[in-house]
Image (cartoon, rainbow over all chains, first blue to last red; front, top):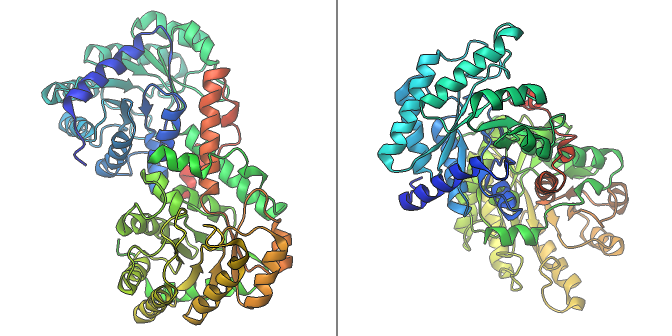
Length: 280
Length: 280
């Protein structure tokens, strides 16, 4: 797994951090294996972000920290070894509930060759409790310290699941998420990831109140990229949706074989020769 | 990796072998990871077949035995551990050129929990030499023996690449492929895989001359499934095409984000909730 090149990673971390400050919005269509990372890189992605759910699904685990830290980061290391752009890893809630666990995870992220990480404050989508705020803050501080110690200024994308998991009464969520976002930023987070938010007015309110980069999870029903950019969003990602869209294609291939016995759903594929070339 | 259940595998091998004898043609849309295997199983696949190119691409290798036996079979083991249908593994040319290598591979296939394997007679698609016929025959015999020794009557899908790799003069290929197919069957192969053949007349000629199950690699431009069944084909597979079609979807997602900033290419995805359920 040792895949480090500290000088290169330092340069990449700085470059990736800068991508959160415009002028263009940073758009990351998440990957889940080396092939998907290479396809995104070849399509012009300035960096690649992993989907933790995508990697877990690919290896046979449900999403929600059922995969081990080592298995998750082994895939990240394969990706970082192959692509030539910065890699940021989704590491769920850091594989453990103590700040030491988050620090260990950050160190493993760096060993895998990545330069950024997502860290969330819930265990899974059914978790309506969220991590204690002071503990979540200590985890982010521990990640920041681990990055400093290793010489890689990790780009920390701190996620709060207040909206995604519908935590507490609906009218309390804005203040709750804002409080967490501010505390995470004070603790050293570079960007605050707010999945579960699609409404333009709400996005604009967060942008105006936070005044630092925010990450929106987009997909069908979300404002367009240009609208998100106009609202002041710094970073857009798609989570496991690109992987699940590929599996949707697979399901259509299987259904078409059964129903009409034809192969039209295979049209538009990356060719074998293209893929060979992308991996040589 | 130890994932064996010899009694279950014996039953599965027998059931999978029977699927090559009708009444319906056996259609296998190949998988490349656990998620894709589960999607195919849920869509009604009676068995799942891995694509060696798909697995290699996913892990960051070009196709053509650049991946190690252990990495390839580790993915097969994850799949076999999760699905409840028989699993057959594409193991390229067996990871080594000696019959002992093929036997070792067969043993590893069984340890991974699979019950069948594809074994090809070329190193990669640029290989116009093909393995020496007597050596290829010894490899199949070694696989058959290894299965017998382990108590799992492996379903051997022996592949000749005479057509795929355009070996020798065009007018010599039919006799060359036929000679190999007959020798492979005599050595213990259950089915002969003839990739690179799409023309109905040619398929019918092989079916009539061989009188045992043949596997055709299908895709856009191939006869439909019902036409292949009418021609007497026993088994149809798609190789790495389903995986590459999913990557085609990913590429369209990335292009759409850049061009119109919208998310239509994500429509038709397997949902997150469906995938969670498939892996619980």
